[in-house]
Amino acid sequence: MYVTDFNYDLPQELIAQHPCEQRDGSRLMVLDCQAEKIVSDHFRQVDRYFEQGDVLVINDTRVIPARLLGCKESGGKVEVFLVRKLAEEGECWLCLTRASKGPRPGTRLLLGDQLTATVMEGGGDGYRHIRFDVEGDFLSLLDKIGRLPLPPYIDREPQGEDRERYQTTFSSRPGAVAAPTAGLHFTPEILDKLRAKGVIVCPLTLHVGLGTFLPVRVDNVEEHRMHAEAYCIPDETAVQVNRAKREGRRVIALGTTVTRTLEFSVDPQGELQAGDGMTDMFIYPGYRFKIVDALLTNFHLPQSTLLMLVSALAGREFVLQAYRQAVEERYRFFSYGDCMLIHNVIKEAS
Image 1 (cartoon, rainbow, N blue to C red):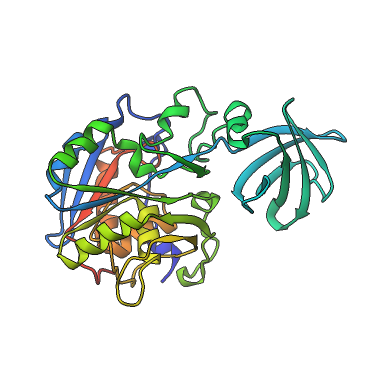
Image 2: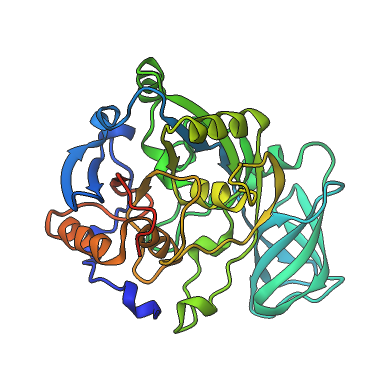
C-alpha cells in the first residue's frame, strides 16, 4: 500500500483561510457506506443523522499559544514552538526551535520581556528540551505572550478571531498545538439539541501534537511511524461507551483524534479502558474498528495519515470518490473548512 494511493487533486482556492461567519454555518457531506450514497447537507442539520441512545465522544483539549518569539542571550533571533510538556514538575518542554544557528545546550533564551528559558538538551530535526523560568501559572503567561499556531496551509498570521474560532466551544484542558477541527463546527445549541434527542455526549482528551501537520515521508504506508500524543479517558466516558457497545448502540467519534484514542484504549475483550497515557496509533486500510461506528471529521490533506484513517473506516475508493465530488461542489477544505459524516460503516472496509 503506497502513500500515493491516497492522493487527490485540490485547487488551492478551496483551502479555507478563515472560518465561516457562523460556527455551524459550514456544509456537511454525508457518506452512507453500506448504500455507497453521498448526500450534501448543512451542518446545522447534523442532528437528523443522530438517534436516541447514540454516544457522541468529543475531544475537550484546548490549543495553547505555542509559538514564542525572542532571541538568544548572546544575540540572534529565535522562535520556540512548544510541542509537549515533558514532566509534571517544573516547566520543561519538548520544543522545536528555529534560528539561523540552532541553540546548543546551556543557551539562555529571552522570550519577550517576561520569560527566560534554558536549552537543556539538543536533538535532531530542530527539537530541544527547554526549561522555562517562570513564577506562577505558565499557561496564563503563554496566553499573554504566545502566538496561536495556525496550520501551515493557512497562509496568514493569526488574527483576533482565531483566538476564539480555532478552539472548540467545549475546550477545557490546555495542551494541544493544533485544534481537533471537527469540533470547531459545534455550538452549545447544537449539543443541547443532540442531548434533547437522547444523545449521550462524553468527553475525552487527546492533546493534538505537531505530527498532525507533518507530511508522510515514506513511500510505503506500513513504514510510517506516528508521533506520540498524550491522552486521558475519564471513567464515566468508558462506562457509557462500553454500555453502548453491549446494548448495540452507536459510538460516534467527533474527529480522528477521538477515533485513535478510543481504538488505542480497547482491551483484548473489546472493553474501553479509562486512564491516561501516550498513543502513537496509526490507523490505515485493513484495520478493523472495535469501538467507532460513525465519524464526524473535516476534509483532510492528500496523502495524510488522517485521510488514511478515514479510508480505513469508509473504504479508500469511496472516500476518494467523495473527495472528488467535494471538489466539484466547491466544498471548503481542511481546518476551517466543511465537515463530513461517515456512518453505516462496514467494519471490514478497506
